[in-house]
Amino acid sequence: MPHAFIGSRFATIGNSKIVPNETPKKEIEEIVGRQHHGDVLHFLDHLTSGRDVFVTEDNDFLSKRTTLEERFKTKIRTTEELVAMMNGE
Image (cartoon, rainbow, N blue to C red; front, side, top):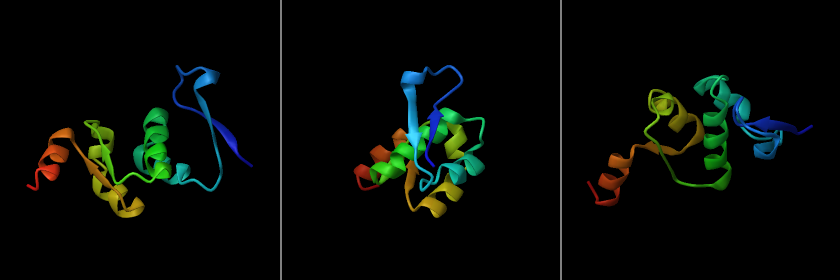
């Protein structure tokens, strides 16, 4: 059964999201940390939208980059790394 997922303890009900059980939400929580609700929601949106690169300066993601990239077959880059990648570096 789907459940409501609120991005942070400061979020309002209007900012909640219905998350089906088929999403990798629980796996993301295990890697990033359950206490990082907003981060989990943000990365989940990235995965479900089918994007290729998740751009962030957030160390919660960068410190777990290898695990997240391998598990979810995506790329995690800083803004600087994305610019270099787009310039063929």
